[in-house]
Image 1 (cartoon, rainbow, N blue to C red):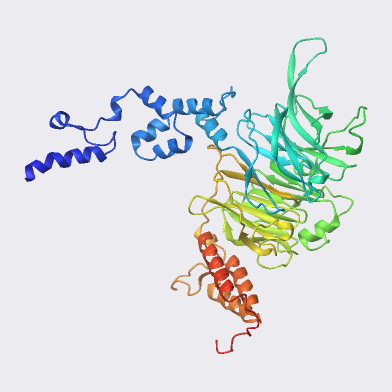
Image 2 (image 1 turned 120 degrees about the vertical axis):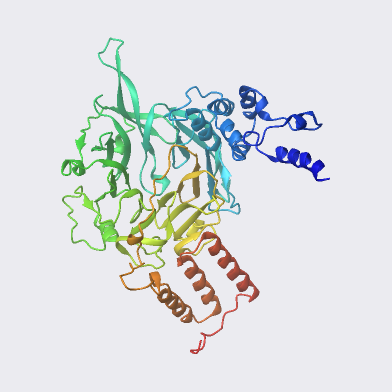
Length: 580
């Protein structure tokens, strides 16, 4: 009986084994009935052709089953067929080490999602996706529409459908789209948070210009084109010399003195001033391009990126340094807590921020800002009247202050009086956290706001990469680029804030990070509350402050809600006795 069982066991092992790693079929097994046929017997071209008909999600899952399918599903020929099926009008497959795979994933994951703050509907919806778009790189909502820039420099104009709700016009969805222009590098509009002020759209693009009038020879030159956001009509254009190439544009200042800041490929900042109130008049203008003071007085600095609001500009260098321009005394006081170093006659002089590590990216609101360093730590600074810094209190910060319970965000956004963070949980899903003012539904699930970052009731897409919020709506951009990854580093043990280094001859610290002291402080805050309702609310805030995982915070918050509903929201319970 044992001898007969041996070939049966062998057959079962062959059926369950990997087609590339499993044992080969023997002579006796080949003669048997019902023996499995290895997929390796098929030509590789046929296997790739069959697999290319699978959806992208199933293709990725199949590639994780074994080594053989991983190699087949990762073949560039498979992704070329998938890319042509997803975007049949796409002629250029893009660039990079894996151009077809990158292009296919970009077009498969592209999407613009929105959630309106007002009304009864609180679900996340998806706008129309332009078939010609090669992924989504940047987007910007204006007063009436949304503009999207793809990875080949095509700028799309998504026209929104307006519906009347109780006498008020509200945006419903992007119903159709048109190509605004091609060859675009970057675009910008009024930097204020309210989209009502975004009347014009400034587009940095590359155009072919004739070298000599009357000849056929041409040369690529950068230019700035100005469009009306309401109709997409071009009203102004300025062209630069072919020797100057730019990669980013931002705006700062008011309409009559709108300053355009242009970042060159070499990391220099140039600026010019335009009067927006005269752009729609049929006349020619002469503008002067000048080197900004941050590049004039600090010529050794190479600016990597910049961001702005209506009264200040933030520069991040390639070495991770941060420099500030503040043009109004009120914003300067909110950001730094004093007017001691403010010079109203020299507003362009850059101010260096003192930071412990290299900064990777930043976000700038009206009177507060957020910074993310190379270790994934988040630092906030500025006005904290509504708790928009997420530090757990409402005290202003005149210097960068670390938010200790948040790390390695995907992106950070600062608004008028609230902040949003897009992060990835341990389960590979993404979640949206917010803090600050919750009026108008800008923090879904937290109408009263929060002084610490809390999880918002928003279903975040799996490939979300950017976000933006207006007064009426929350926008989330989805597009995954396999060649772009945030280069976060692990923080060395000796630089972990709050954990003292053990000295020689001593054991492990009894209270690392001051956890016991913090818990005592939390208990004293709960003890000072006079009603059960206040204690529940205070406990929810404390859970948001504590460095817990997202799943743990959700569990405690839901448990507290269940207890609160079971008690009927009972108030009138006095503070605990002193013995407790």
